[in-house]
Length: 69
Image (cartoon, rainbow, N blue to C red; front, side, top):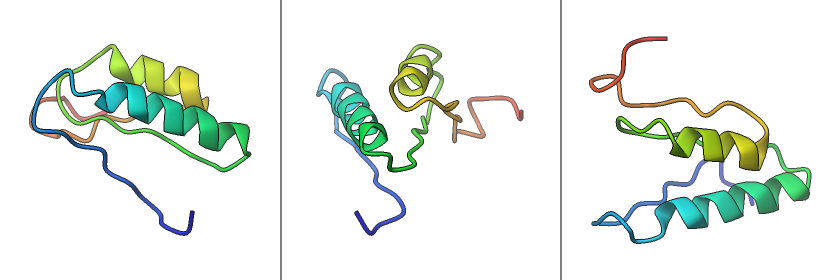
């Protein structure tokens, strides 16, 4: 990959965004490509899954819904 970022989005919940994200994070990590997931919105479960898949903490990018770190 030559890009520095990728956004995975869908118009509804349950569309498979998290499943696809976790697969990509793990596949890239397994190929020794530095990768990090990020989440937008008040979700406390998916960031832990992201961290497990890629090995680094997952920040939340939603400044309105989440308090500053």
